[in-house]
Image (cartoon, rainbow over all chains, first blue to last red; front, top):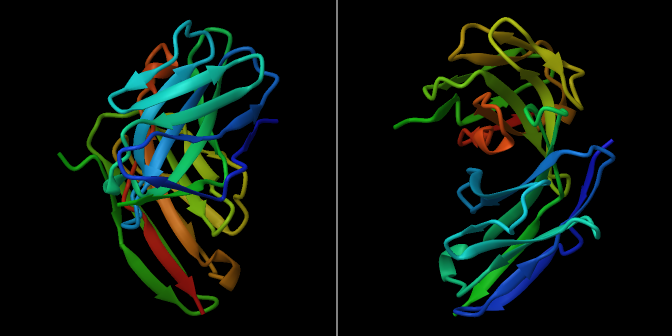
Length: 119
Length: 116
C-alpha cells in the first residue's frame, strides 16, 4: 500500500522568502510519480509540479522546485520568493506505475499543509 | 478552454434522497476519477474509469455508483444520501501516455455537498 505523510499542518512565511513544505512517502513499487497540487481558498486543485522516481534531476517549474531524496523517501516542495497569492493548501500525492512506466492512474494524497504568506 | 467541468457546484440533500454529480472533460483524456475531500483527510478516491467502458472501485466506494457515459462524461450517483457523505467531491481526468509525465490529473472545481 502507498502512503503519503505531510507532517506540517500549517506553515508561515514572510513575503519574498523561500519556504519548504515537507512530504514523505512509503511505497514498495520500484516505479512511481510524485505530484504537488495547490488548493487556494476558492477550492480548485491546481497542478504544480511532477517528479518521476527514475528522474535523475530534481523537477523545477518556475518558482517551484521539488527536493527529491529517493533514499529518504522524501519529496519536499520548495517555493522561492513567496508571494501573497501562494497562501493556500498544498497537497503532496503519489501515483504508482507498472514496470513499463505507464500509470495505473490512481493518486494517493497526503493530508495537506496550509501555507500562509505574510506581507 | 473549459478542462474539467462539474455540476452542480453546491447541493443540499436530505437523508435518503438521491442525486447524480455530473463531470465532463474536453481534453480527450482516457481516464477519469471521482474523489472526495473531507477536513483533515486529504482527497480519497471513490471510483475511477481507466478508459471508456470500464470502471473500478477506489478507496471509499460504499454508497456510490458511477457511469462512464462516453469518453467525455463520468457521473457519480448517490442512491440514498447519508450525512456521512457530506463532503466536497472532485472529478479529475488524465491522459494515458507512455510515461507518468503525460498522466497528470486535472481537476474540476468541485461540488460541495451537504446531507442533512
